[in-house]
Length: 215
Image (tube, rainbow, N blue to C red; front, side, top):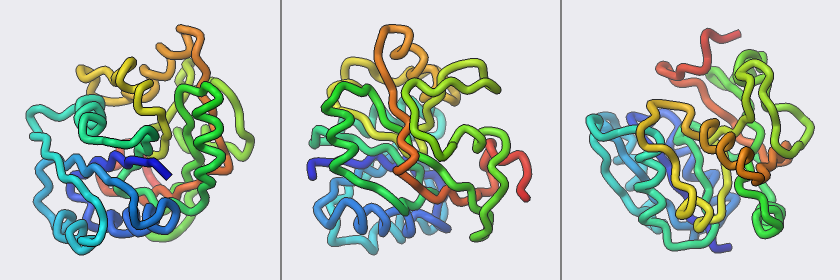
């Protein structure tokens, strides 16, 4: 499978190993991983280096120069494959059919995003707030009532490389680059597919702004 993974990292030592191992389990040993590191000071890079049999490219981005969109665009510049998988370093793939992803991207969808299951120390958390968008029903151009806009989430999303070359992420945004990108694409007549059969565990992190408490 011709997949490149863009993996953004800043001090993700607790879960990044789980993330990478799940990529190997579902995408194979030949997967290309582009690690965009934002001045990590913990053990995350040492953990990444234990996967020395993989093709992992490390790209650095400074805190002063970091935005989510800039990190993703920088990662894309270092990808050599046609299909792109964007995943957060604290996410772990638990269900994925790559043939379905390729078929859907080849059919014309601009992006495909998957279901996220929020976990706190292994415990499944009630899917409130943002998590209520990750339903069990697949849909096209999913509209989030709470945010009053179309929804997409880059903790687990797939793209065709040349779509992102033609339509890069906004590098001036401090967050939610995925939602702004999705709304621009849909307003221009494109379609984005939410596939509930793609599933990742999204592990709680202490600075996770989307959690707003657990339980």
